[in-house]
Length: 285
Image 1: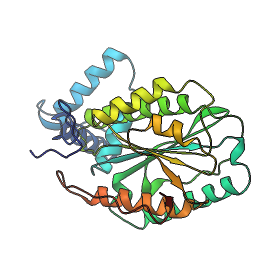
Image 2: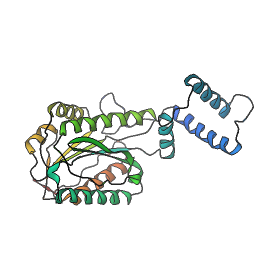
Image 3: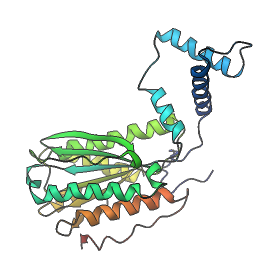
Image 4: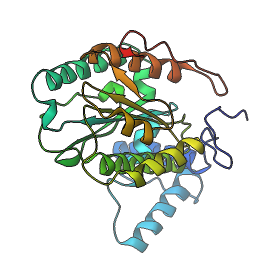
């Protein structure tokens, strides 16, 4: 099986579905059948009957049917088994973003949603999460496919706990990849996209070490974009690739570029090299 360029040594990012996934799908079909007949079919313990017995035995051991865990995951990926491109937007909403900067960022998120939704394939393959950092670190949107993504309205406040935010984003990427593997879902190398207009007000060097190790291991792709008075030297120390400086407040152009890049990735085949389009339209050199 060909491996994507995104694979790290010893890590199978694009992998064949596990044997458990067909069983999960069979059981979901069984539940649908049971809903219609209001009973579990009788007869020899074969096929769906055997699967039902196995499930009931598991339930008897735990004395409950878990809700919101593996079963929810199984339903999600059974309904949409497309490969996934995960993207975490790591957004600075500190007090210095007050006024036009936060307004432009909010408008750009709407543009991002509309552009992603216009691509039927990418909207089912791309998964978007948003973490904000302004006074506190907050996951305002957990991973959801682009077709279900609804842009939040961000409000500026507080200082810039960037180090904590980066750590939370990397933890989310690890957790999401584990979910993909557990459910036998193909996935590409995740993206982490940091946008800030300042510098960290907390301890950030341990997080920077994690970013560089992860990039080296090809565990994710990390981008850093500085806005207005951002501390570009600190961003350079955090990101393994050169940070980009946003030209003015061209957030819309930035998010158009991001959506087009994710769409290209989502439409690619394993092993394809997908070059990024030029950033000259929104980034300063």
